[in-house]
Image (cartoon, rainbow, N blue to C red; front, side):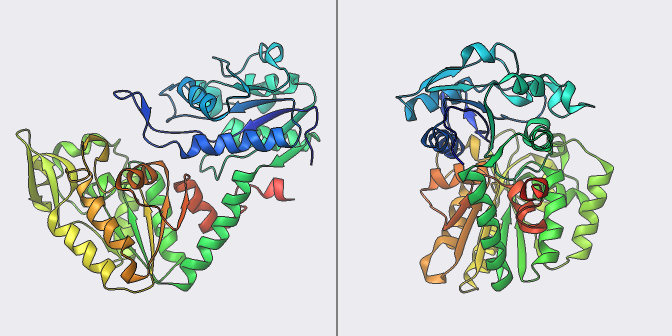
Length: 396
């Protein structure tokens, strides 16, 4: 389908970790994907492009101003404008030939996840004012059915508005099918960390159920939470999550159901207030967890090296990588050693990396996975539920 003379509303995912101290993004893969989307629309003849994306978690109200500046560097011949608002009728006056308008973070308004009627929302009403509209859906898998990601394009399609799948979304769909086939045909290891406990606790048991040849190795906050589920005293580390009884019960059930296929750390590197020390699991209450410990690193490396031609799926970090000044320091040390073993060519493993944190760690270590997606938990839902799990309305 051509976009000649059309004003394209492009829903993308530019959610990227920005380091306030350095003024740089830790990884710009998702921003480059947005650039790809914009180029795709212009090549199809678009007059102007309105770009919408979320940034950060709900309620944090992070800005997309830095993203707009980054896009300017990669599209010097386009007229890039940062709107400064999420939804407003002022958007109509900004449209023009070769114009790209970057809206403010879609999650800067609670209506993105808390609304009763799609058509009464500010975002929907703004989009309906755009003349000669085409909606370009080019964000990868969404694990949250938010207003702009899911409900608005679905409503617009029902009204007869053209909804077009972009190149990034199509690649995501195709890649999910490919990854599913690989995991069905090989032994696999899932190295998982990260901070989004509800997502991990939903996804991991379903991955283990669907792929019986998979073993999980946990690190980061995820593993600490699992230790808590086993009754360990984790001290002040418990402050890093909002404790919900349902989550704890889900963790206990998962450990029981998949006993032997979930590997937990034997020790950790913690900060006890005086410096970094190695501590067994029984002493997690003595300080803040920074990384997996040396015995765990060796255990995970030995497990990976014991297999040949396996798949290694990586999502999240094994430690608090943002605090490590170098790859040899705690926070990065666990990932540096364990990932190195996975990438060792003598094993013949297929290494797959998913999610922004994983890509940021790969970039620091200089590793390039054989298969990757900047989408993490949401991508796994495509693998678990099928490549069109959130797009049945669009596929049909």
